[in-house]
Image (tube, rainbow, N blue to C red; front, side, top):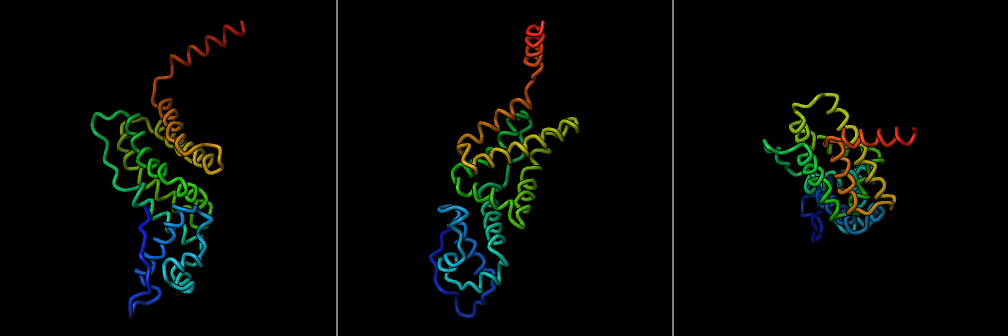
Length: 213
């Protein structure tokens, strides 16, 4: 979670655009995002909590959107995208994909306001950084799991899961899905993508044929 700061004026001799000030400002934004969500990040309140001036914030971050994206990016780096272990030799594709999804989404389950903020920040200028960060964090694990798979299958699985993840996050942000339902929904998709569905598909075709006859 974003670290809380005790505040206080900058140390003597510290310039208004120093990395130390940036860290304090980002920490204040993370705290606001975690407790109040995206709309709680008002720059005057950030300045008050960080004990810096608005001018200092604008020298370091050209816009509110840039500041929020940076704060979420750093939060995710610490909480959702810490080092993900490589798959074990006997790990199944289903288990490996779910391990990666839990790794990303469980911290968000515990911090739903941050997930909502992430969804909104993706649409802000610079928000594509968050997409790139996520792909860079999980793709090495996914690539190791799918190293020997057919390239077309790999492309399809990646496309489906990526769009499913964005869809369930969007439904959550719109109030149509509880945060605790996200992983079970993705788990159903992963199961269908990795299971042998031929028997069920054949039975469905047979029922359809009988219905028409």
